[in-house]
Image (cartoon, rainbow, N blue to C red; front, top):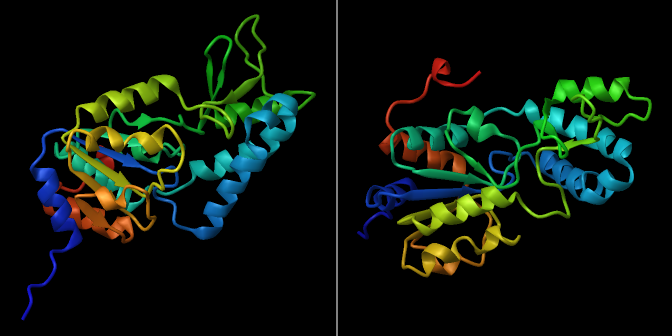
Length: 260
């Protein structure tokens, strides 16, 4: 009788436990599996929440973006988010990079998450740097004659924008630089639920590959890097990550451990 294949989470565990500097990259829709929600998010970003609309019709931009951001703020922390946080707290994962703008990984209790797209749960003034929560933005919109939120800092009054990047503009330079630096030092690199189509994040796995560092690919979306993976798991990531955290990730986090 042939040997049974090693379960996916055990394959990944073997690679992680053999490394000291594990870096994980999660995709921009990591933790979002409802197809209707995914399509709505893509539509909002590409058609309504893009840089051109913000610059030419900011009132229309905020009419579309604020409800999308408010919905995003209500997203549940998924088992996958919790599993990665457990793995980080256990010292298995050193750095987490995410393309998502929902801030869920940080809210799940992970620390120093590198958000290369920023997050959509706050707005900022590009003139003075002041930041605002979504409810503050809503109040500013309601109070403005033109429905455009503006900075309330003294002698500023500059129009606000989301803290995330928008469709049609580059990623956050400092975050990308940090992502590159930690990836350069990685001795194991994991990609979860990312199609790796958009530059510069699509180039990130090539950094460890050129040094012969193991590459682990997890999730249902195929990529151009699949052929180079040391471990390739084309399955839903949630159950694999939960099993992985249960195997090597230490105790499960309780609610008091999570940020409010």
